[in-house]
Structures are given as structure tokens and as C-alpha cells.
Image 1 (cartoon, rainbow, N blue to C red):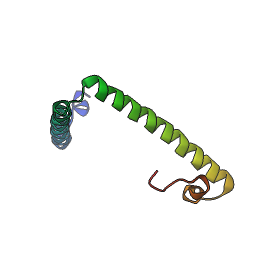
Image 2: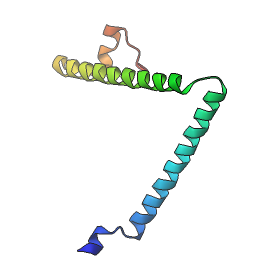
Image 3: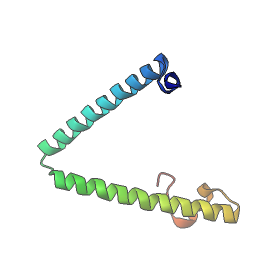
Amino acid sequence: SPTSCQPNGANEEALQHELEELKQKDLALDQEIAQLLSEGYSLEELEKHISLLHEYNDIKDAGQMLLGKLAVIRGVTTKQLYPEYDLELSD
């Protein structure tokens, strides 16, 4: 029925709250970008940096996945593999 597709008051309120949080995050990011621009960074430089961070995170995720699979094969925890590969727990 059409009424079952419409959010109830609680869902609508939760969505409104989430929307407000996203607007605040957007504003904070705009302010951070403005601060970086005022410090002499260019948009191209910031975009390149963000792109490199995404690439780094993708590579790190792949490494974590491989460590996890290796840990399963060896029957140990991932944490136990870190010293063997000279990794810090914060890596």
C-alpha cells in the first residue's frame, strides 16, 4: 500500500537528523578546504593528495586481506604475523 512506503514520524525525524549532520560535515569540509587554500595549497594539489590517499588505502586494504588469508592458512592471528614482516600494529 502507498502508506507503507512512506516513512513514519520517527524515521522522518532520523532522516532529518542525518541530513543536518551531513550539512554540518559539508560545512566543516568547506571550511577546511578554505583554510588549506589560504595556506597556499591549490585545488589540483589537494585533489592529487586525496587521490594518492585513496590509492594508499586500497593497497593497504589488499595487504590486510592477504595477511588475513595467510593467518588463516597458518592458523595464527594477523597480529602474530606483524613482527615477521616488520609491521607495526598501527600500520
